[in-house]
Length: 276
Image (cartoon, rainbow, N blue to C red; front, side, top):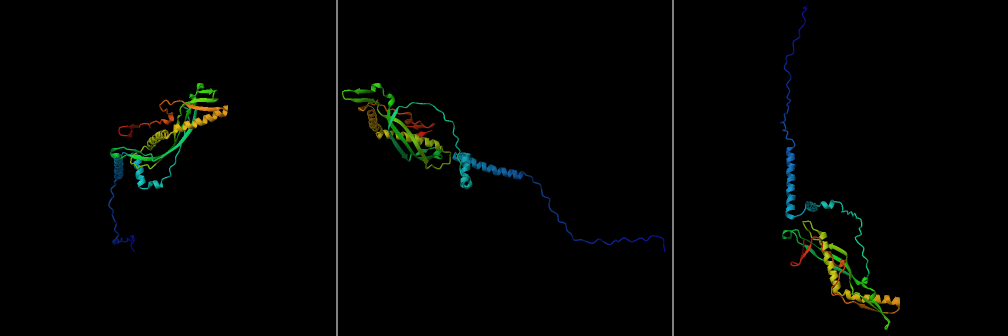
């Protein structure tokens, strides 16, 4: 036997063949956020242009335009009901005036369908109108502060007190209730409070004039004569004769019967309408 170590032959057979196929994917290009940002800005710019056009052509405000769009799509149906909060301020005394009036007649008056229409904008595109129902009162009597000692005398021959008193006059005019209804639909921003003030001014002026034409001063004279005569007769036990001083010829109105014109409005006598 040989002393040399046995050398083993290496296995040179070919490696087994495999049919595995590796798929390759194309590399995606990184685009970033720029397309999304510019796309969103384009949509926002489109919305701004639409809102601007609505405001320009209708003369409305941004709040009214958004509210109108919300009403068309039914957003208001899902909104919460309206809630009103009232915060009252401190009462301030502006003056104290003693009143020596004898109010003998009070006439309750009412008007329905006091219509106020406001024309606004080119071709009246922003015009609006409303109707009003108004209730009020007009009172009449005499001013007792004008009666002096010389106006009360006693006729001993006839055993009669003769009292001369001033002619009756209006003592107060007031609106007790005003209800606004049948408001028109407007794409602009209507001044409903200004419309109500115009209706109240007109109604109070009509109440005063209608009461005078209806003879409220004549009725006040009759009632005053009856009330004063009975009062003095109950105190003295003698007959009383009431004499009214001749009217001055000019009707005197108390401040409450001279309503102030709403701020910012004036009446155009040539066109017979109110302007602001």
